[in-house]
Amino acid sequence: MLEVLLGNVPLLLLSVGLVLMALEALSPGAHLIVIGVALVGAGLLGVLFPPLADVLILSMLTLGIGLAAAYVYNEFDFYGGKGTAQTSDSGSLAGVTGYATKEITTRDGEVKLDEGGFAPYYSARTTSGTIEEGEEIIVLDPGGGNVLTVESMGAIGEDEIDRALARAQEQSQEAETEPEGLESDESTNPSDSRSASGTDTDPEVETESET
Image 1 (tube, rainbow, N blue to C red):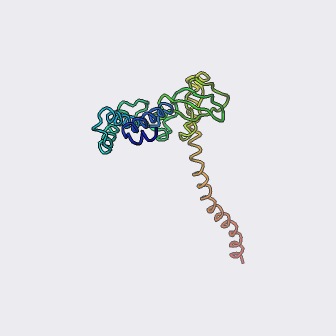
Image 2 (image 1 turned 135 degrees about the vertical axis):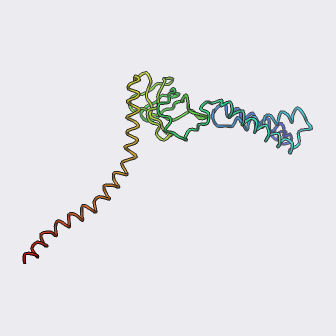
């Protein structure tokens, strides 16, 4: 079987392309569909039209079909969230809704976001309790885009959602400003020590002037 594939380049391209498309179906968002379509297209043309079964011609066909597939893939935005990626601008994930694809606990879980881009699946955890699979969720803290802190939509109302988002934003801002506060404290210590030493020497100056 392997010898047949190696001896028939169009059939080899067709087989590899179908495998990549199957992998894309199992793991959406891996962008294997573009390469798969290019290989399948070139392989089919080579099988249906034997004069095109030249390696150079097949390479050009693969490149051309791949570029066309990439354009269609990006233009029609099959996975939603056009122009977004999982780790870019993770702060924009706060307030995004979705649903739990696995049970979410305080330690682990998984969600699929409605506006998650080409890779909408994220690791997630809760602040307390558990969220069952299939429940709608809202992102409270993006966590840098790696592990999201989420809460069940059914467990909180709109006002509580706003408060939770504001609280999560305040906590992230406090975490960013803490190092700056420590540096400012350290910078003020030398002046304090100098002022303290200055006050200690004042009595000596006064005694010398009296003598």
